[in-house]
Image 1 (cartoon, rainbow, N blue to C red):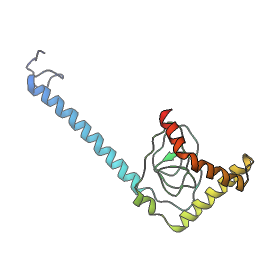
Image 2: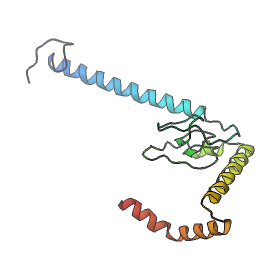
Image 3: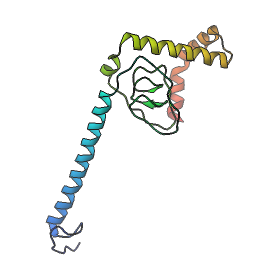
Length: 160
C-alpha cells in the first residue's frame, strides 16, 4: 500500500493519519445511525397508545412498524398485526420482520380497549368460520387436534 502523505486526502491517502481519519468517520456515521434508530424506537414506543377502537387497517404490500394505520404491520396499536397492542387479532404478512413492543407496554392498555379488541377478534373469527362452513364445535375439535400436533408442526417449519 502506498500512502501519498496528504492528510485528509482520499481514503487510504495520508498515511496512518488518513487511515485513522477514515476509520473515525465511519465509526461516527455508524454511531449516528444507531442513535437515530434508538430515537425512532423511543418515538414509536411513545406513539403506541391503544385507542380502544380496534380495526383491521388499510392493506398494502409494504412493511410497517408502529403506528395504527396498516394491516399486518408490527409493533403498533389498534390494527391487526404482530408485536403490538390493542389490535383485534394477529395478522402476519409473509416476509416481514416482527418488531415487538415490551411486555410492559403491551400490558399498558385500558380494560375497555382490551374488551373492544376481544369483541372484534371474536366477530372476525365467527365470520371466518362461516366462510369455511365450520361450526363452533368443529373449530373446538380442530383446535384440540392442532394443540396435540403443534410440536411436530414447529419441527416441520424449522426443517422447511
